[in-house]
Length: 139
Ligand code: RTP
Ligand code: MG
Image 1 (spheres, protein in one colour):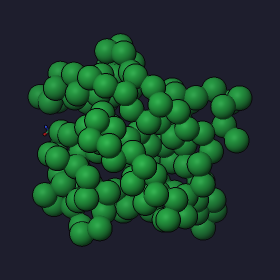
Image 2: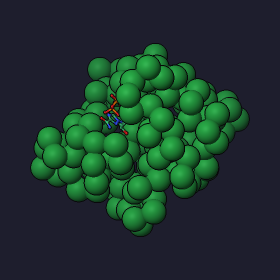
Image 3: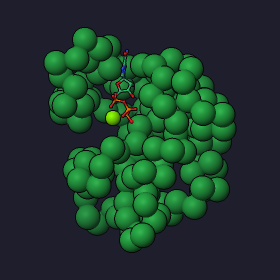
Image 4: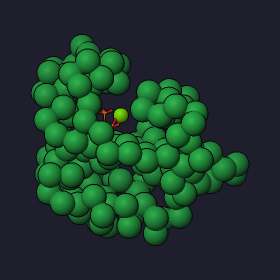
């Protein structure tokens, strides 16, 4: 399997609750290399653009409100089979359905406030990584 990249955000709920360090430890222990990372605060326009794919969904307004209420930690991660392995590490969207030991099982509060984002395809990983980072910030 070729080494490739995924994109993640530690969401405002997890940052507020002081879980940033523990989540980064889980990511590190799972063998992901950090290509780029920063703490940032998304504007309403950032969140509407980033999540544009969900703009017809009933939870869109709530999602934008949530993602902009405090800082996030954004990162590009590298590993063999990165997208799929990271989705396994974070667990199901709804923490109540997430497997034991997954980041969402450990740190998420609800289906909306679910601690972390993980890209769902190689194509989206590249788009999402470029949304937050310039080429000069990737190492
Ligand atoms: P993500 O994109 O954040 O990694 O999450 P995901 O693929 O597991 O879930 P997705 O369907 O892409 O949904 C994006 C985010 O929208 C919020 N959501 N709220 N209230 C709800 O029913 C609901 N459903 C989804 C979550 O924050 C979810 O991660
Ligand atoms: Mg998604």
